[in-house]
Each structure stands twice: as structure tokens, then as C-alpha cells.
Amino acid sequence: MRGTMAEVGPVADKVTSYFYALLFVRHPELRALFPAAMDTQRDRLLKALLTAAEHIDNTPVLVEYLQNLGRGHRKYGTRPEHYPAVGECLIGALSRYASAVWDRETEAAWVRAYTTMSQVMIDTASADELRAPPWWHAQVVAHDLRTADVAVLTVRPDQPYPFLAGQYTSMETPWWPRVWRHYSFASAPRSDGLLTFHVKAVPAGWVSNALVHRARPGDVIRLGPPVGSMTVDHTKDNGLLCLGGGTGIAPIKALVEDIAERGARRPVEVFYGARTDHDLYDIDTLLRLRQSHPWLSVRAVVDQQAHLQLPDAIRAYGSWSEYDAYLSGPPGMIRNGVHALRDVGIPAHRIRHDSVEELVVVGD
Image (cartoon, rainbow, N blue to C red; front, side, top):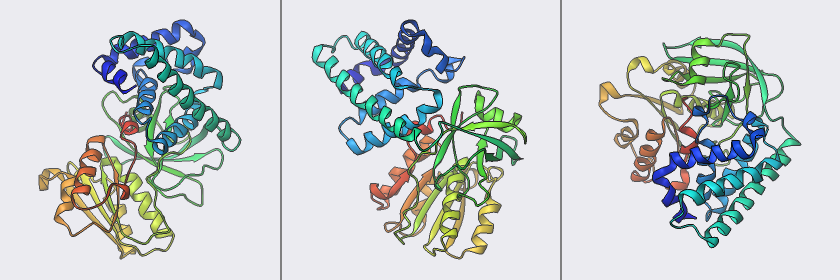
């Protein structure tokens, strides 16, 4: 299977195009599950399948990934009978573009793997159907434009929405049906049930631009189920080292609120990274939290002033080997941050961040 992926890697775009062509020609009824403009969705399904295949030997990671996919795909209207069609077209696309290494044994391996993976997703979706809706409607109750391209949105779900601080969800706007993007919760769960998100509009970002520049109080959006494991283990009392870049500060603030609400006094060190002072759009909120909680430290790392990237800044402060680390921000920052944290002595199992694969589309 890895040999297949190495073979198709250089022609991934062609594999993706052929995969969807097969899917929609052989199973035209599935076209309605996808957005009208496929350029926003084009490679996600195939990328998810190949990402799962990469972790085929790591059962815990693979199962968790597939369970999240299974739960998340409910919002698209995916049913158990759809999975065989997708598998058939996946095999068709791979066999065409990995012909140099494709044989009966390879095909049998992919069929076995896909059958197993799809069954995990089907079973998870079936179990989830008994306890949660496929999506929630949520009304925008506040829209605060913090900068020209960053808005803080507060929404009210139409029914209870259980989540944990540090998690994220997918969001669909009424202006772009079936186009979903991921955003982190910017606060811990609240007694009034309201949810807050930080959204940065990016070039050609359909959902982000709609949420920042078009959404107003009264508009109704849809939310998928909460996902993500960047949560706090409250059975421990060691310190937290938190790195938030740009709107990645949103889940970091949620983690701080989570610690505060539980009355814990474990040290929490927050590094807030931004390109300019102007981009520190939520620094006042964090500084107010610091005034109320002496165990909290907040440091701003501004690229244009310090000429220092956020992951590198932590090397200038103390020893972090006994801390649990949390990272949130652009994929490149997370990758560099993981390397920097391991360099200063934090073991990999104590470094938490959202899936880089998922985060590739967070800002769209």
C-alpha cells in the first residue's frame, strides 16, 4: 500500500480528478452530496482516505482518525450504502495511476484495508446517530470585527452542544451550501450555551470571507460535531505551555478559561504570536485573565519587532521539560513548534495540537 502511495504521489492531481470522474459517472446520485463548485472540496475525500492508509500500522491513531471521519461525514448525508461506491472508485483510480506496482496482491491489500476502514466509519456513525444530530443549527447573536479581516462570532445553537475546551468544529454558511470549514472554539463551555469563534478572512476563502464580511446577527449557520484532542488532562497538575499563532489563540484562550473555571492553580504560560502589534487582536482579553489569575503568564511575540518566529521564542524562557505543550495556528507554525518543543526537552506524548491535515483548511 505504501508503494502505491509513493507511486501516485507525483500525480496526485490526476488521481484525484480521475477518482471523482469515476465516482460521478458511475454513481451520479452521489454528486448531490458535494458542493456545486468542486474546487473547494476536490481533494479532501481522497486525501482523507490516503491519510488513513498512511497510518495503517498504527491502530490507535488510525481508529481515532476514522472515528472522527465517520462522525463528521454524517453532516454530508453519507450513508452506509455509499461506502462501497467510494471504495470501488478509489481502487479504480489507484490501479490506473499506480500501474507500475499494481498487481493482484496490491489490489487485495487495498480492498481489505478499505473494507476495514469504512466499517469503522460506518459503525461510528451508527453509534453517533443514537446520541447526537448530524449537525446543529446556530444563530449568530454577535459579530465583532476586531481588525479589517478578523471577526469574533458568537452563536446560539438550537439545542445543547457538548464540547471540550481546545476542540474545534466544522461550519457551513447559508451562502456556500455543502462547503464546510474548521474553526476552534474560542471559549470554554458556557452556562448560557453560547459558542464563540475567531475567524480570519483569507484570499479566496469562501467561508471565512462570508463569516467575516457578510454574516450578521440573526443569520443561521450549521455546525458539525466537535472534534479534536487538544484538551487538558485535569487529573494532572503540571504546567501548561501554550503557543497560539494568529487566530490560533482562540483555543488557547479556551484552555486558559477551562483551567480557571476548575479553580486550578497550575502554571500556564501563553505565548501569543502575531506578525504586527495590530494582529494581537485578543491580547486585552488575555491580559485581563492574567490580572485575575496569578498562575497565568502571557507573552506577545511580534515578528516585526523581535524578528523571531513564535516556536523559537520559547527557547529564550526557562526550562519547559516538565510542562505539557499545546500548539494552535497555521500548519507551518505547528510543524516548527513541535520540533522546537522537542528540542527543549518536551517528549512527543506531552505535545498536543490539532491534526495538521485538518488544519490545512482551517483558514479557508
